[in-house]
Image 1: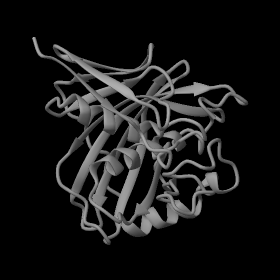
Image 2: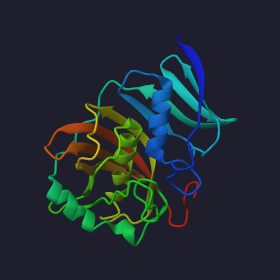
Image 3: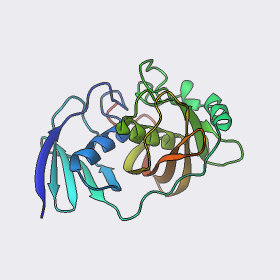
Amino acid sequence: MRCATTVTRIGRAYNGPARSAHGGYACAVFARASEFTPPVAVTLLAAPPLESPLTVTVSGRRAFVRADDTLIASVVRVGRAPTAVPFVDLATARMGARGFRGRTEHPFPTCFVCGPDRTDGLRLAPGPVAGRRHTVACPWTPASDDPDLVWSVLDCPGGWVEQHGQRRNSLVLNRLSVVMLRQVEPGEPHVVVAERLGGRGRTVRVGSSVYTASRQLVAAGAAVWTEIPDGLRRGG
């Protein structure tokens, strides 16, 4: 049985809520630290802290992430890779971005991926896709081919699939699995699309994908989100 321990940390720039790490970025860091062969799924059990030592302990087929005595996340290999969400073209993604609700109503406005108050962030603006219920899309032009950013970009749009539907409370990421097929092309426009796959109670299942503008699939993600009541912001 393999057993190993490493220590990592998440920089302050990579926040989702104001005082905790961005969920997708944290999942990428934890998946990489586990050194498991993809695809893997990361389950977040507590808000990942910023600028704090995080101990990643691999024990057999699982890895556990702790901050001091607090269990933050678990990582496990999964047998099935996420399924891609159907492509939308760049014009459709741009149209969706025009309807991004987060410009005026955002639970985490300083989120480094989709926060409107982060001029140094990725500035994603996932908005509704006409004719596709519970589906959002937006363009993204990556500045680098860092795979951790791809995980991050696959995360945020999932939080908006319900915001443009009936559900109005905020959603927080609970579990994320990602498969990467190729690197992004820095400086070139890409399309990010996410859709609701189902849900029960306070949980929502979401699929998300990143494509090149020429329809090449870069990465696909599968996520579980949990609804939190208005006024409650994890780590915020």
